[in-house]
Structure formats: structure tokens, C-alpha cells
Length: 322
Image (cartoon, rainbow, N blue to C red; front, side, top):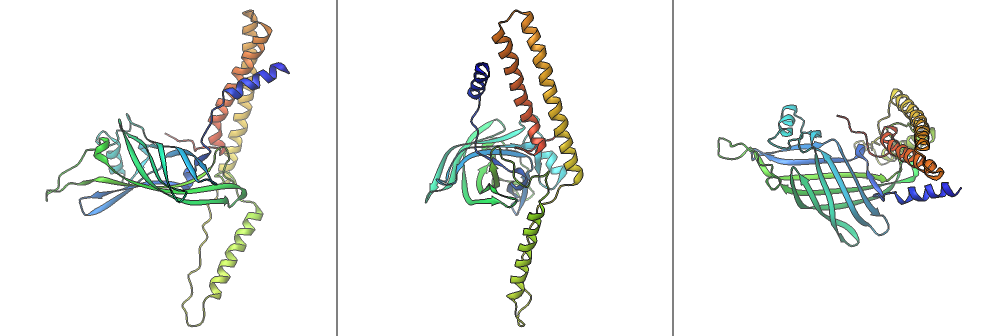
């Protein structure tokens, strides 16, 4: 028992504090806009990103914001243009795969966060950037009333030349193809760290939830019809967005992957523990160290690989592909 307590105390001392909210990439967006030929705007977005932050709903304190964007995930709805932006003229994604932001200070108005100041790194340049922040509120997860979801909007303007993005092309009239100022808009939905959103990409709603949606839809339709008299045009009925349902194949494959991964992880851990124990016994280690070292090594490895497997099971950030 004393040995077990010693191991638990050691592991607890190795724990790392983490931000308590995690960005839900499925319902968030990172977009930007830049002037094109001096006459119009080009919109774009990044499709692969991850972020976390500390936020207290009672005090509205926001801090420790970290955000990472994969530059190769840029999407301007034009493949040829996207490929150009990925090369050395712009993001040079092979050398600079990420854009990062780390907060330094939060400013508040009437107790609510309204400005976030932090360091952005783009290419090899680090520069402080100010984001306007709009806290939209917190609500219960529609699929599980015990789970919370928090929403923010953030926006800023940067001069791309400040970060080394200087490429441009002259036009016949003497103007330039691209403007220098880039408008950035970020929409954030986040869930509590370590808590999988109730409606994940792997699980279907229960019959009770389906019935609740149908009742709500029927109520909205009835109220809409009641507000129309014979002299009015039919009122536009409210449309309730429903999240896309995953396929049965997706669910089966993820359950199978999780089961196989779990069996391999535990079996490999037991095998490694036996090998390490035999090795230490041959080296004439004491009974205490022969017990402690294999157990600590195996438990740490299991924790590490479990963390790697977790995104494929629906926990934490999504597993980015190549």
C-alpha cells in the first residue's frame, strides 16, 4: 500500500495545469479579408486550428489564451491562389507551418472582456496585436444540460508588411494588386477542457432529444401560423438548425479503433512491465526500485499514448491530417 501511495504522489506531482476551455473546431471559424485591386475584397479562412483559454463565467475573467493556426489549411475558394499563398511569396508553409497567438493582457468594460492584447507570430516575426472581443454568453449544451458551451467573437486588423508579407504586383493604373491591411474575424465556440461535447461527431441524439426538437419545431410553426391574419402574407417560419448526423460506418470504425487501441495499449503495457522488471532484477536493483521504475514508466507511457488516441475517440482537439 505504501508503494502504491508513493507512485500516486509522484504522478500527481507531474501533472500539468491546463486551460479550462477548449475551442470546438467544428463550430468555430477563422476568417480574413483583404482589399483586391483597390476595388473589391477577397475573403479567406483557415480550416485547421486549435485553441484554449481560461475563463470564469462568474467573474468574466479571461486569460491564458493560446491559439494555433496551420498555415497550409488556408482556403480562399481558389486552388491556384491557395497554392501561391502557401509558397515562399507568402506563408512559406514548409518552413513556417503555424501562426500562433498568446495573450498578455485582457481589458474589460463593465466587467466583461472587450479587448485582448497578445503576441502574434507569423513567419519569423513576433508582434503585439489587439483583438476586439465580444463575449456572446454561455449556454447549456442542447444535447446534455449538464455541459456548458461558451461563445466569443474577436476581430482585429494587421498590416501584413509588419510580418514580412510584402509580395505585391503593380497594376496598369499604377495601383497595387493587394492591400496592406488585413481584417481578421474569429468566431469561437468552446467547451470545458476534458469534457467531450455531448453531441460529438460520433454519437447520435437520443429519442428524448429527437422528441424535444420535434416539439420545439411544432411550437415555432404553430406560433408563426397564429401571427398571420387574412390580410397578411404568410410569415416566414423559423428554421431550426440541426447538426449533421454522423454515418453508422463512422461510429462503428471509431468504436472498433478505440477498442483495438485500448487492448493493444494495455497488453503492451503489461509486456513492457515484465521486460523492465526482469531487466532490473538481472542488474541487481533493490526490490523497491524493481517495483517502482517499471510501474512509473508504464503508467506514464499509457497516459501519453491515451492522450494521442483520445482525439480519435472524440475527446479534445480533432486529429489533424496531412
